[in-house]
Structure formats: C-alpha cells, structure tokens
Length: 136
Image (cartoon, rainbow, N blue to C red):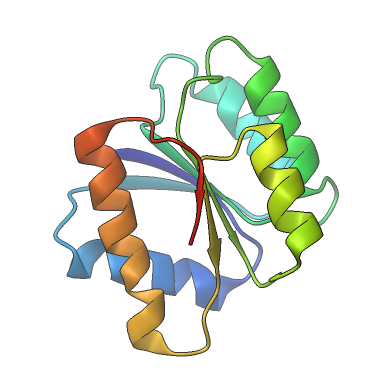
C-alpha cells in the first residue's frame, strides 16, 4: 500500500508507522512535513498513485484544508481516500474537512492504544476502497 502522510510532528509520524505495522498493513510511506511539500510530493507521485492520503489539518506553510482542496480538485487524486489526522476536535473543523472531501476524520487521541486504531481504519479502507465520509 502506497501512503502519503502530511504531518509536521515527528512523534505522530512515528505513531502512524507503528499503527500500520501493528495492524499488519504492508506499506510504503512518503512523508511531507508541511502543506507545500505535500502538494509537491503529490505532483511527484503522479506515476505512483497513493492508495491513501493521511493529512494533518494544522500544517505549516499551507493548511491541511488547502491541501485537501487541491487534492479534490486534481483529477489524478480526487478519488483517493483521505484521512484527516488532527488534534482538533472542533465541530467546525470536522464539518469543513468532510465538506472539502475528507473520507474520515481521526482526532489524535492521547492514549497509545486509541492511536493504534488508525491502523485498523487504514486496513478497512484498503480492503473496501474509498468509504462514505464518517467522523471517528
């Protein structure tokens, strides 16, 4: 599974990788540490289409919402499942992310076991394809 992760926190990058390993999802992950790099990475990956994009809303240089808007406007990626992975539990952020085309909204939990549930969510999407939008 080819995954693009747009995340600026090294600890969260580590936890995403750990969740994937724990759920036994075979993966190759490319990481962008800010919104601008995420869009550049997406352009570079046009030949190797990602299976899933994991996107933090609070990215430097270009917000996750702006990156998501660009993803959904690009015919190459507009059907790629996008999981929002963020510390924001705001109803406004959740609603906006889903309106912009996010498939899932995963609020970063404070407990490790809850964070590991991200691996199961990714595994579910890998098996079923692009899901109907749902807030976790």
